[in-house]
Amino acid sequence: MTPVINDSTRLKMLEWKEGILDVVLDTDAATEVDDPFAISYLLLSPERLRVQAMYAAPFSMNDRAQDPETGMEMSYREIRNISKLCHKEGVCDIKKGSASYLTDKRLPVPSAAAADLAERAMRYSPENPLYVVGIGAGTNLASALLRKPEIAARIVVVWLAGNDFELSPDVYNIYQDVLAAQVIFDSGVPLLHVPCNFVTSHMITGVPELESCIGGKNELCDYLISIVKAYGQDTFAWGKTIWDLGAVGCLMNRTWSKWEITSAPIVTDQLTWSRDYTRHLIGNVKEINRDAIFRDAFLKMGRI
Image: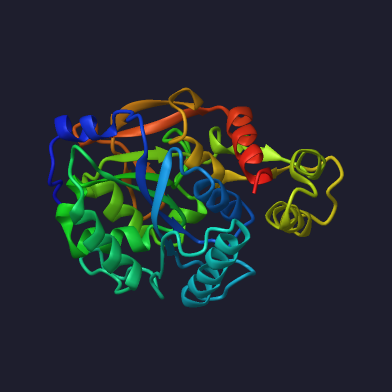
């Protein structure tokens, strides 16, 4: 894809904006315990994030789903479950996403989610963009960009995708759909890349902290603790990384993350980063304030 905006506009769109942001969330909600935390945090932060829609992303290649359609359907149900536990049913649209991954970088995968994003984004502008938080494979987002490339000038993408560019992009949200990742990184869309290792890998909590901070507060909190407990066979002196919470936290407060402007890397077919420093610019998060994000999220979860 040829970028539809220039670097000047792109950097302006990536600048920190105060006030309330319109947001959509693309999530493989049932693949890991971190997505329910991120969904809850997003829904419980209306003073900053106005959720317009949530999209169920496909997932597979693990012991929870053997094919992407099953994973997407599971994610759809979990989005609805968390919305109910947050007492936020009906506050936004919830759409089913792709039932398969991309097979061609020129062809979108049809889905209600991709169609909704392609249409919804056209209501926004470079001066007032729609924020797209991605915490799953990029299939839905890539398909929306392929359906309507001009939305790249109307959205800002915050995507928890690969590792830092000094490491490998061989991470779940990329290797499930490499073609989708290539479409996104090549599209020129204003992108804040939120790395896993060395950045959101700091978003670790454990059962004692969870029980101390949110235990017994309400059904949502008890559910979140239960799925963390179920994830680890022995939770003594054990921590669980809540990766996706960091992506939402990057939009909450400008002091809670530090990031650089750099050229968009190329995602190779061999699942490596390749660098061409003449390519369009993106943001890349380098540091994140683990304590501030968890504190804010826990306080909001406990107040339902």
